[in-house]
Image (cartoon, rainbow, N blue to C red; front, side, top):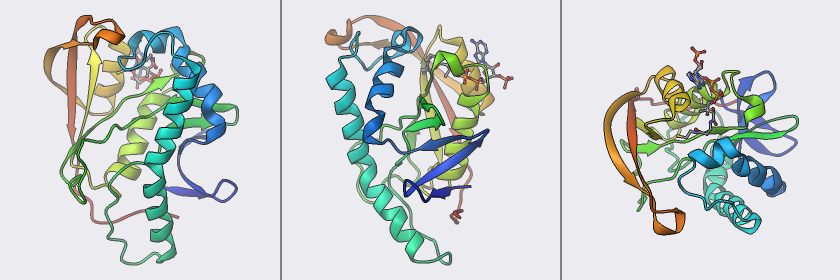
Length: 220
Ligand SMILES: CC(C)(COP(=O)(O)OP(=O)(O)OC[C@H]1O[C@@H](n2cnc3c(N)ncnc32)[C@H](O)[C@@H]1OP(=O)(O)O)[C@@H](O)C(=O)NCCC(=O)NCCS
């Protein structure tokens, strides 16, 4: 269930053992950059140049914080209206990192479909991605993150009806996470990176999961 951190005045989704999904903060830039510079993550990333320039990492953090701002504002307003009649649909996702006491350890980007007109997200599919820092892999964090984000945000707040994810055909760890989270393979396709990212073509797999309808929010 969605919780509220009074120290940071932000929402979070608890995953257990002190690990939580939260919005990005500006002082996350350094660890965001380090995470995306890790070899295992950089090798599987199809959006960033290699190596990732620090200033681009900073821009990404700032842009994601900007993207999250209206959704955080809507959530604040929703909280202040009380616990009854929570029927608003929030058109995006303010959560971008998973962190524990030592900083952020995973990112959970949800690139929104464009254009995103009001309420257009209802019944839409959102594509999710995740990267767990190598020192934290193998602990069930990616699986818990996908489940937490979908169950505590995408279904009750965004009313999404479907999630999808793309993975390189060779990325078996990612396939395992998606299958364990209930997504199934729907098709394979050739994916070509833009020239500035190398221009290579590789086989990719699209996974999908249908989500149950929800008419209520759950917050504390
Ligand atoms: C893929 C990745 C996110 C997995 O994170 P993780 O936190 O270690 O995954 P989890 O511990 O939640 O594992 C979930 C399930 O997948 C399985 N799994 C994880 N890695 C696996 C691997 N290399 N091979 C086979 N199965 C694997 C686990 O055994 C677990 O199954 P279980 O529930 O039966 O125990 C992480 O390895 C990573 O960030 N890799 C580099 C970046 C990347 O590939 N991102 C995905 C881009 S689409």
